[in-house]
Image (cartoon, rainbow, N blue to C red; front, top):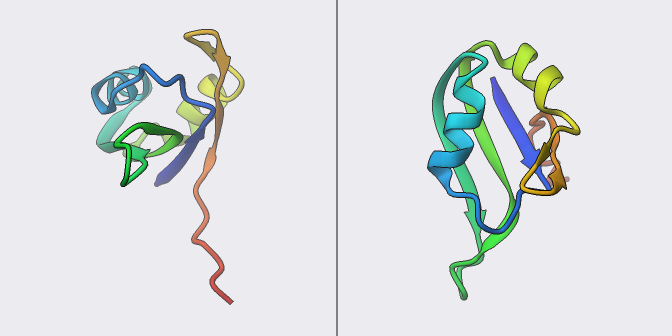
Length: 81
């Protein structure tokens, strides 16, 4: 399952994100989206999990990490229409 993670603190790395979700199941990938020009975090990312995703969403949605409340939900494909 692909999970959207928003309101990520600027200092968080892909590895930090993976570690956070790994406590709840098997993470296959974790990626924080960065600005192409500045290479800085855009404050959101995506985590892909092969199991434990529902529990991770439940446990981490609105959890405070580095002083910011995460927004965590199932990622939906972008509607380009």
